[in-house]
Image (cartoon, rainbow, N blue to C red; front, side):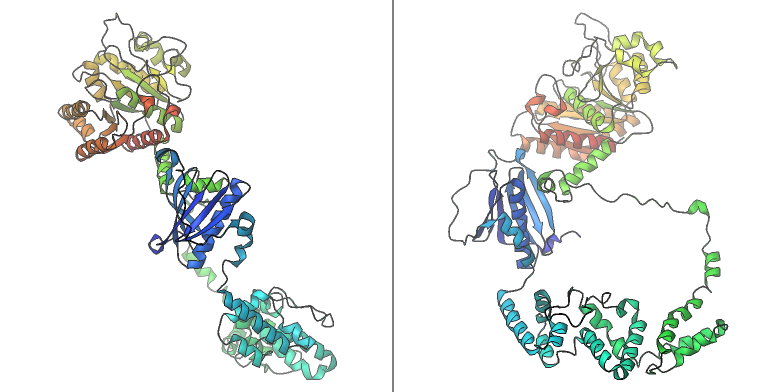
Length: 634
């Protein structure tokens, strides 16, 4: 069950630190408790024990700020020992160096050093009450033991120390035991009754049958000392230090004991027994025996009470026939016997993931759950090919990095089948920013072999001679014409041919556009588009160009207008510390498009070959969010 955050206390302030040398502390207000461990796991175990003890002592959920080498975590700890991660900031996103240098701590608080082994030893004491209770328990336990010094009484009264503490938690419980030590423990006196039974069988036999009858009426589980939650030595002549074991389940037989000592309510079921003889006529004797008085010392009484449960069984089969007829349904409507998987994988990131490396099983936090949802979205396969066009009429607006990173995310999580196509009308830069293959083929080579590639007998391997595979990022690149002296410009018909080939071999096509929104290939690209992505940087002219591009698309046609309204805008920070600028631009675009995603500054995107693994963690997370937003539009 999740911890109720509204019950978590912010006062006193609780903070913790785990150092890299396997030491640390837990500070509660002005009190600091240090911890030590020989390994990172031992130090972590000691910290968790301290947090659990503190939550148990306060009696309400507490909020703990933990600094560790992995980052900054806010934990919620409940009195029952459960711990959840409320938030987590990885160390990459925190001011460096991390953890920050420690300042001299105030010495006003009480310092209690705690070793890792001591923390484990204190675990059973976490639920104990105040110390003075334990002293009074010990004194009262001695008084009880002194009163029942006789061997037979000691054998029925001695209990575990933990059980005596449980009995002392209610006022007056001990006084009742001191005045009437055998009344509450009547079931424990059974061995004494057995002993006296050997000496005076005539006096004890009737009571024993009454007890057996009451126990059989309550159920077979209460008739056995072991089933009632107690184990008594069968030999009453053993040493006096033989005591009752397993006292924890003792309350159960106390509540069930009245039927064993009050046989008067037993005749109540007789009216229900009077009806079955009409249905079970062949066995009148078995139905007549329960009518005998329960106090009769004769031997037929116990068998009669054993037959009562069997006498009621003929009542249940009667309605089965009509019920089966009423509930008969079509087999095609039967639900599946396979239950859906509801167990979530344990956390792998943040403080919870750090704990899981040492044997814990913590659930992922909100941020990791959101990341897993995005991964699930981009891993989805569609019923037909999908085309995503990345457009901005201004050069340097980050179109090519957007194509590369979106293609990498979809290919990595979705299992390949992704093509990045440079649809520049002359010569683009997609080939410069990606890994080259063993050949120099471009889109013009694809046009020259279009008939072979579109043939029904063509195989997928033939396409590998014209595209450049990205080994790490799992997608292929179709380059534009890279001849500096070339004069060829892509036409609308040629775009149709290449798109037909791409759709045959790939499930996802990302098209990198040129800068002219009036060119034939640019306009035909819009006709094939299922989702528009408009990138821009934090430079004002790039953002203005993105806005003009969207306006131009909206005015083309009804389909184009729908694409513009459902576009995804990606704002990439061009310089460090431009989060305020990117946030302002994102807010300006949000009223006009479906979604806006901000990508933080990353030097790996400024120049050179783009590889997804070379990006910072925050940058990769932003591109995953952008890809998930694109997937929702497909």
